[in-house]
Length: 107
Length: 177
Image 1 (cartoon, rainbow over the protein chains, first blue to last red):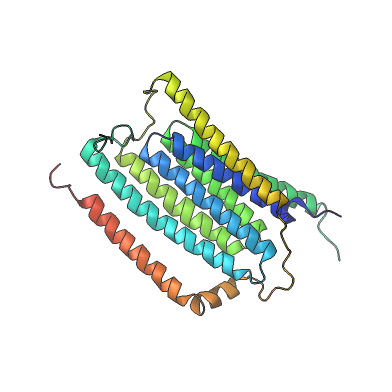
Image 2 (cartoon, each protein chain N blue to C red):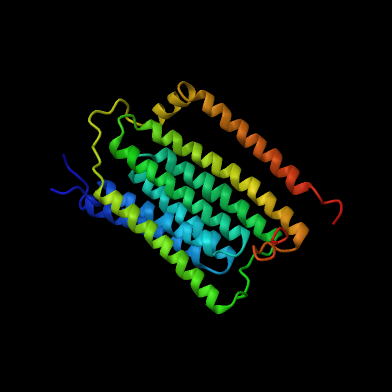
């Protein structure tokens, strides 16, 4: 008897690959800083899902992956706080958060 | 042992719902032109992901996903959206280069997806033989306070410094404007 859909490793890995691909596409195509930040969060989530799936199915001690993902979430929260304050500082200086306008170093 | 009627069917449906929420939320987050909608997409994606974590035998991380991502990250991004005006600009670049860039990024994303999905499906994953712990919330708490206590302290330090840095960066230049 084949295992149920939610007891199969491949399903989770394919879902994580999908989220990662969508995140990378958004990171390249987005033209505002906040949109790029959101796509970066998607990439973080894909990595966490991958960790959790392998942790559930192939690891002897299933607490390790959970703690690692918990740390990923903490780092993602810190990253969002810093990135948003940088975005607000940029908006104050340039009156815009479009990546097209932030071209002062462009030769 | 009596089981709830159609229990397997119901859990499969719940799993598909979580999977669909994660996938469609990611698509909304990456593709919609208004940034507030893509934040909502991120929130939907995180709700779906927390459902997936639940199915991966980790109710603790499912709760944390909702608490941290939906409750903290998305709300903070909404704050930043209120302070800046980040809607995607109307098509500024010439049509041709926009098409080329869309094609390139679509190719990269598709290649990533196909490669990783192929690796995941074809990979020779070995089932774990014997589990040393059961991965319950109790076990997580014990390891956080014994094996990983140094990392736990470090991440609290990182969060503190991030908050201070965010305050300093966001405050700077307020007097001039």
